[in-house]
Image (cartoon, rainbow, N blue to C red; front, side):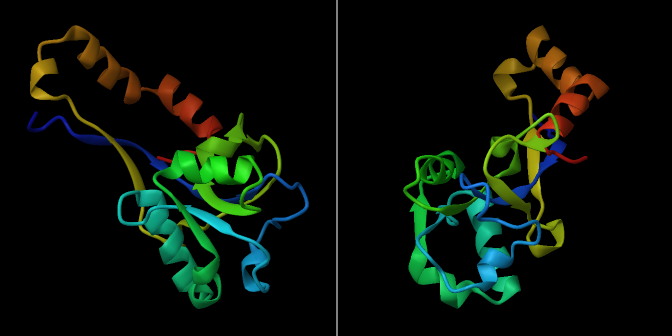
Amino acid sequence: MAGTRFTYATGRLALWSADAAMVDSQGQVLRQPPRGKLAIADPRLAPYGAAAMETLAKLGVLAAWEPHLVQGENIGQAFQFVATGNAPLGFVALAQVMTDGKIGKGSAWIVPARLHAPLKQDAVILKPGRANPAAAALVNYLKGEAARATLRGYGYEF
């Protein structure tokens, strides 16, 4: 519905491995010769995939990694490739690997936001929901500090 769209958070991109020793805090593993596949979400369909390609290009390593990319249809599938060991590395949403402000398992580099376009998380009330009190309550919640505190724990920014 016109006038109801807003950004409630900005997501973060992370280079992640289920191997606790693979990714350093500066992402230097990307500057080494590729060993195995690098999972990303389809950059034509998924903002996190487009951000991954931007990051590789800005780091000047896209040409080296491009033959090693394996694309998931979405960020969830890219995460699964890494979580199951089918790819040793992958670009994932930080929220997939962070809980309570810490990386849950494995190793990760939180990609600096300057390396890609913002990953805005937007909400909008659709026309059929304009009179729905639950829709209004959800929007109010997303705009409040309780939601922000929870989202911060998963690495989202505001």
